[in-house]
Length: 181
Image 1 (cartoon, rainbow, N blue to C red):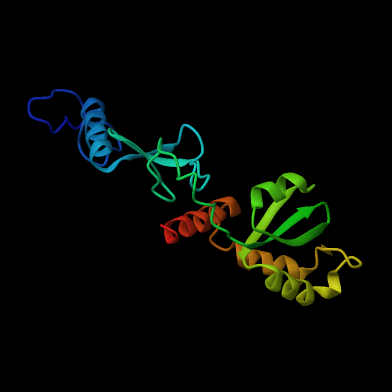
Image 2: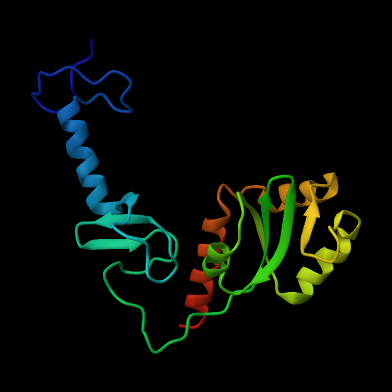
């Protein structure tokens, strides 16, 4: 058993620790690192700028981990929310809807769906292009499509490297906020 490497500490080093330190000295080290570099954690409530729940906690306060908004401050109410047009792909049962919106949260609240499958930036022109691209799978003249292999493959490409489409949307919103100052 290895002893803790700190001075005259007689406790045993924690098994598997990255450095030969006892649990108490590891905890002190973690606290020091957290003060210096922050600790990633859930924000107390969603970020008012981008909606993310992930934050970095410092002794002086929180920052949003997505847009770096100083948590606890309010976005300038006089500034309009930036417009970010997206094409969304939602699934309900064995069909998928391809639509567009500039307010994703509001739109998703109004639509029956089981899963927000994927997102891509773009407005009406991109939506029309996707409707034409997958026309063979279209259900009548609606925005709903059969789960055709080519449509599923397209959404898999859009989702590559994206764990959660909402986090992608939050990043786009935060980029738009930053671009508008």
